[in-house]
Length: 456
Image 1: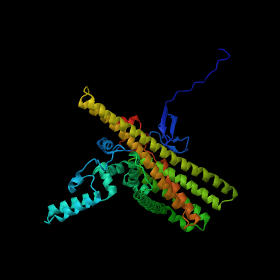
Image 2: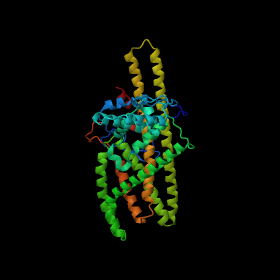
Image 3: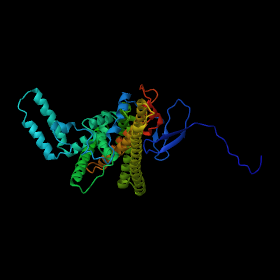
């Protein structure tokens, strides 16, 4: 062997696996181990734990997802004036007006129809109901614009589908109706709608939206306080006796943990159940730790106060960075969707002038692109949904942990309860022993395997 040679030690080859942290969305790489035990991956970035290749329940009917791919035909190209060129005109035809009719013309047409209905029977009652329903939509500028862009049933059907896909009703205590809030925001993002703050109508819309969000935060706060009260009510009588309090905490924390485990076991089988549980867990832990640092700042000795300020600052920066990267990921996913949408439009033009492909072949190519676009749409929506959930839960936790109407000991017990929920949710996974037909990888990744499953 020559002296100037460099020797590189070889290692036993193991297959490398790429995944994505569901908490901070960072790409991670690790060595796959052959073992019968359950595995946990520690994210190098946020230091949270997650399960590799997490499984979740497949939608009840695969055809529903494939049917859902038709949404891309409804999300109209930004720049098209849907108020002058609506996707359907049925409601305008019922009132006998043009799609460009003014609000006064719509109102006059409606009242003329109602005034000319003389006979009171079942047939006329149905006509009055249908006409009134149409008028209710077209007389409201916001609802009219939505109808012009998407038609009469699209948004409601989409909301039902997304509610089923993302948590269902079982998650209502934790995230409420945020799925609908996200859809409204997401439609604006996908269509490139710009907000004009100087426009009085837009300003009023933003004001109403903010008011509804405050009501939503208040409702979710009340629900979470009611949930953790199952633990706190048993330790509250011992606030004046630290020794007894410590013993009661240990006893009732274990009981509370059992209750939350039962709930998590049900929640994990909902659509995106594992992802939502881990997302909620991340925010709860982040905010609970911030609240603990605040208690140290207010009640601790000099060293605890210094550490409290330091740790709280670090945690706040982590919170801001997390939300920032959620916005970036949403934007990236939306751009990817637009690229596929553009490919579909180009393919339609090519298909129109291609005499060599059969109609069946043209349809197959378009369907493939359409379903890939749907995957990107869902990925974009999930990123947006995560952001909305995180922003809302941060406000909920702030209300709970910085409530000036309760004592510091009450705040401490609230922190204990929230950390228990966080711990249970974080450790919840779909195991091999779960009796659940799953073949879908963690939705958050939206990789080619999922795409293949949809496109078959």
